[in-house]
Structure formats: C-alpha cells, structure tokens
Length: 277
Image 1 (tube, one colour):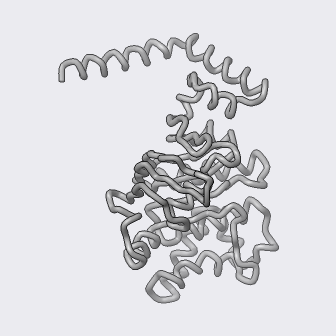
Image 2 (cartoon, rainbow, N blue to C red):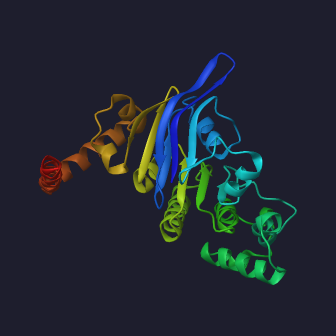
C-alpha cells in the first residue's frame, strides 16, 4: 500500500499538486487519470522519488519514503518495478538480456539462477520463444510484454506503469490490461497506472483517482464511475455521445436487473451495523 498525505509540488510560481491525499491499495490496479496538465504525471514521479515534494508525506507500507535518505530509498526502490510509456528497451540487447538487466544491477546469485528467473518471467508473459530476438524484431505489443517481464523480474511489491497502452491497437491493449491485472492479483502487487485509456479505466480500475487542476477531484472504482454525479468527471470520461449512451444503457441494465435492491440492502445492513456500534 502507498499512502499520499497532503502532497504539494510547485515549479516556480506554478503550483502543480495542491494538497493531494490518496491511498494506492495492494492487490489492486490503482489508476491515476486526468487531462493533460492535471498533475497526474508529476504525482507519479513524486511517488517514485524522481521529483521531491515540497510538502506532505508519501508512505510505502507505513514507511515514510519522503523522510528517507538515499540509502534507505534504495531499499524501497529495489521493490519497485517500472513499465515505461515507450517500453524503454535497450536496442543493442536481446529480449532476454533486457529482462536480465535489473538482476545484473540489483540482484545476486549465479548466471544460472538469473537465467532461470528470466525464463520464468518470459514464460509468464508468453514470450519464451522471443528470448533471443532484438527489440527491432518484435511488435509494439511484444515490447510492452518485455517491459512487463523486466518490471516484475525482481519480484516487486510495487509496480508503476506510465501509459502502458500507448500506441497499441485496442485488442492488444486489452491483453496488456488483462496481463497487468492478473499479475497484480497473483502477486498482491500495489500497481499504479497513469493512463488516458478509457478501456483501462472501465475494465481494470479497481481504484481510480481523477485529478483536476492539481487536486484530487474524485476517487472510486470503475463501477462507481457509471453512477457518479461529478460533472467534471463525467465530462472527462464520457466525452463522446457514444460513451454517454453507453453509460445510460449500463445504468438502465442495472435497474432492470434489480441489482439496485441488493445495493440498497447492503447499504442498509452497513447502516444498521454502524448504529449498533
């Protein structure tokens, strides 16, 4: 779990983050969404320590990351996996060598042990047959999967993904979303994704933080979005007429199916429980 407590960041006279508080939960896909200039990229960079916050606290499983020195932060960073927007693979290295790079940098053990771990990760992303190929010889979707394999090779507790579906076709994007979600749940990773992709929002958003002009405007799940009354969020998510109609259809299906009664019942039980306390 990663906790953000009233974090603030300015560049010169421009305030980018204006007291943002949020929780990125373990075992869930946590999304940061928002239009360009909303502060979501700066927020992610602050979380991994690429940018220092001006005020506020960032905690990794209760440990104050903002108050750590470089040596202490290195221990946390060894538990972080990063999937970059452009995959950021080394062109002169094979797929296998790219995935092994973090093990050579931070890991210990023999070459045989490292090779075994690399093979396991490539198998997990279904790229075992591409191990000896170079990045120029594989597709964009395969490069993303290599990036994921490299990001998980050190068994990270935290996984950061910057626009993982950028430049991919819709079908490949869904496969990448599914793979990240499976890995998150399988290894109980705290996954944080910075995205503009609405398919990712609606299919993978276990926990979503919507940023607007440097502030957290809304927070909830992909199911909550359909029934949200926040106008700024609705204007951002359901920008097209097609998406607005899709939202109305999902709301209609929800009420026709009678699920609203279950939701009301659950709410009633929770309220009764609270009253007893």
